[in-house]
Image 1 (cartoon, rainbow, N blue to C red):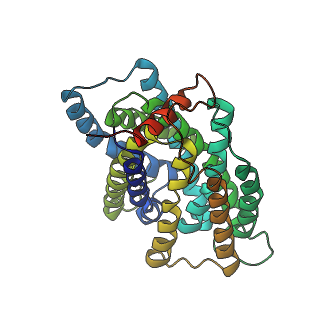
Image 2: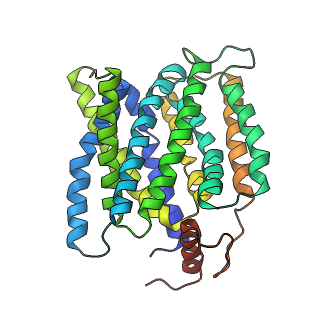
Length: 322
């Protein structure tokens, strides 16, 4: 098992890879359901091949429970990607990625309610700060902002944050004791099936010009769904849920930069202030735990799967890894 520092570096690298997702989704010029299906379906053969190679090397196998948990997590990812496309269309790739970082608070609350990972008081302080930032990004301050429908884009973004939070927590639980590539492959299988079902229900399958649309979708699949999420999935079982969500802040920073450089997006000064407020809220939420290393054997909520994961990470921090 890698050390916690190694896991943090891996998560940051994965977040950097997926930071281009929103921009590439825009460049593909396809409908939301087609974009989600392309991202997941095109990644599936590559992940299946990597999972086969992983299985040949031996090691643990996925339990039936973890397999279905990963697939169900993938269904939430499919819904997340489709709603996210609508948010990006309404408020732009950069801001559409920033808004979804409300998931930092939602992940912490869900981890508390479902897994027993009690949040610190800093979370309660961060929540109104982040909501204030959301209001500024959505143009609720009464000034014109970037985006066709900033308010609607923020509303979609909040929905994305909720779906993304469920995906992160479910995938994290499925990854405990499971091979990394197999876990992500099962989640991607669920996301592919979910994208197909939702696309048929919404009658939302429209591909942009075959070229370069297919090329952009292949790039999206490889950089985001394969490389990016493989790196993140490796780190999930080794880090607490709150820290994973905080490390994913690399993604909005990268998306804002790429959105400005590639798509010529120019958020207003008020919206950029809202971005700063939101990211400041995230740092406040994390400040209650950052810099407080756990002690081996420390127990907070007896018997929860999350405790076992956090305990393993604490133990690894004080162990020699060969």
